[in-house]
Image 1 (cartoon, one colour):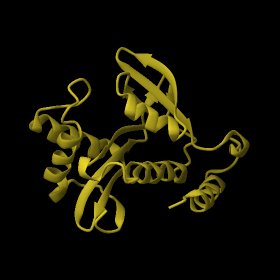
Image 2 (cartoon, helix red, strand yellow):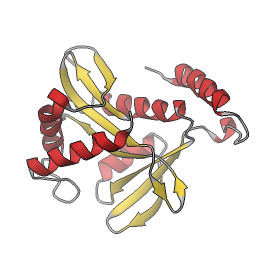
Image 3 (cartoon, one colour):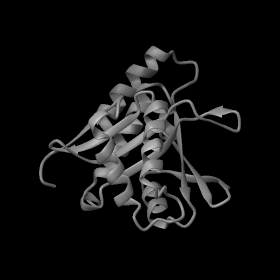
Image 4 (cartoon, one colour):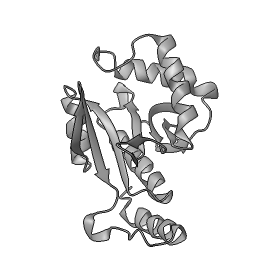
Length: 186
């Protein structure tokens, strides 16, 4: 990496839209099954993501240059249960293999813990084996399938550290903040 990677939460695409669009298109250059190919469609998709992220759109910067992003939508529902979903994790190909994806994921998971969530999910293409293995290394497990997509879920707390549902939101927030700090590893 040229410099120190810094992760920032964004609430507006503003001047980042073109760079995030470029990163997306570069990262998915060879992916004809699961990604949008049309630049105008990618731009609309990024606008949709920022609208639904509710503070969960994080961008990795190398200096002033964006090099990756992750987007979490907290209000997703699946089979009647509210479980936040990670909609996108993208790293500029020139920066892949340097731990940026893991750093973005840790940031998103800590964000969800701070909001009191105990589980997160994502969808990955069944033939996207590299991504699936990456998510599995981070503790995600396949829980269902819909067409060519696999749903993967992760408990945000190990079974020995599960928070009782009777604990207040304030206690949850302080507990998650403390555990996030001690387990960050960054």
